[in-house]
Length: 308
Image 1 (cartoon, rainbow, N blue to C red):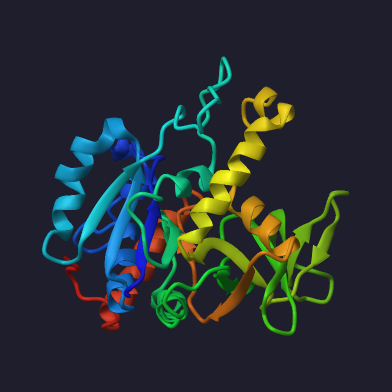
Image 2 (cartoon, helix red, strand yellow; image 1 turned 60 degrees about the horizontal axis):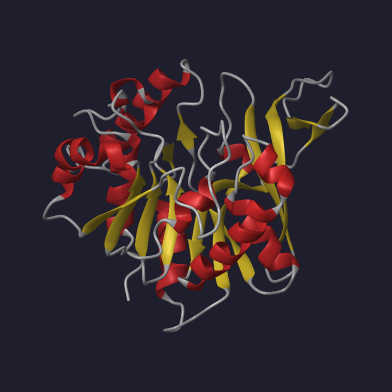
């Protein structure tokens, strides 16, 4: 069974013209998302699913979905603040969405095959899709509890215009994920030896060295449909915790769910290596560099001048 690509796009809205997810960066106005979908099709993915807001559906179908017609089967699902298990209600004053794993949960009714979750505004690169596509396609039919994440080499995920936040990963001898630590400030810091090593700022505000090739998470995950059931059960636990209901900004993140499953031994998550170089528009100054990098890939023949 061909795997499905699941794009987290609920952050888009009617003012999408100003959102980086739909900024035209390719030679014919292609978005970063267009390149992800093109790469996924090349890597053998058989269906594309987006999670969006319901009030954006008509505009999304007209202006976005239409371009993929005839290319690949597409489906939509919807994230809403009040999409909660029976017996729970939105706390008064809460306006912030429930987080990335809540968005993933919205795909339960439309995704019945192994799937890859990505952000719609990150450029992941062809090799990353090949690695996760191969992993998912080779899973035995009915496989459960065998997940994966693409671990990008840290040196391939930096911005030249400031620090970035990354989940720094640790894994065992089987390349199974054992831990993800969120580092909110990672960048190159020149030292007195004339070197320019990668460093992260620790809890005390001190810069610490980080290996060039240490794997970091860019929110590119591979799951099988059993993941939805685990997420549903754990989301009820999350909502039952008073501190998560009192904190109007508490979020149900993917790493939170994955960490629970690997810590308790329910599932494994293989860390896949990739040579792909991530890029995106973290800072306004990144935009032109991203346009130039895409144009270079087109000039080299990696992508056609017009994708769809």
